[in-house]
Image (cartoon, rainbow, N blue to C red; front, side, top):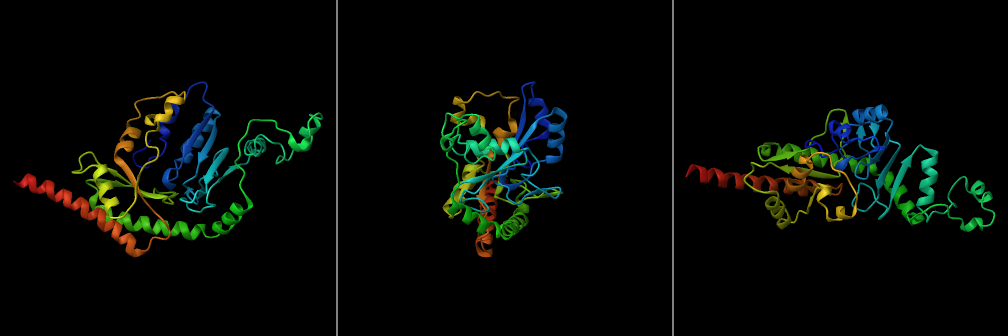
Length: 298
């Protein structure tokens, strides 16, 4: 991971590859697009698929192209905490016909009924009622028409929502710039459009306070905080159930896991709330910095 973005590091991708590697799976974390130019070059060089997790990146861009539009397939989430919502559910994008047909099967119990080639498949299995023909394993991931109606309505508002979040981030970055000796805040990189699903911060090891302390202060002031999910996923308990291979010590992932957090960012945040959040953070850091300075002077 990159400390500057919390995204996958292109420098580390090829180090992790083996002859069995078939795909690069990446997440545009918190709405900050990955270095897709370098990543797609690596994928072409090694003939790999690219799967983009754009669940937090609705409207994000890299070099003028939308996040989620680079790889062989991509996913978006419409959970109610995201830029736009259908309450639950999401979307898979692909321009590969075979992948699209497989996705239609997997989302509905392995059923053929949503596939464009269902009649051809049915002709190959005349002994089975074509209304109940299952050709694969599957799940129940079918969206409802009500969810679709929510999504169509929300999509028209996406750009306004994104710009409101970007304005919040610009304000916070300006207000908190003076705290850089203790806090690292993300910025929008040249050639990208960051859509700020949340506003992340990284507590430096030399800071006179811990991540837990600043998070506790914000929670006490009524500002919800979150760790960067899932941080270093290797440390998650569920990984005991998953066969996996680790390359290197994952130093950046471990550091982010212990020292980074983010606050919510929403288009409904007004100037008063935005200013209050900046004041809470600034006042806390200054008070802690002053305590350390006072001890040193004595």
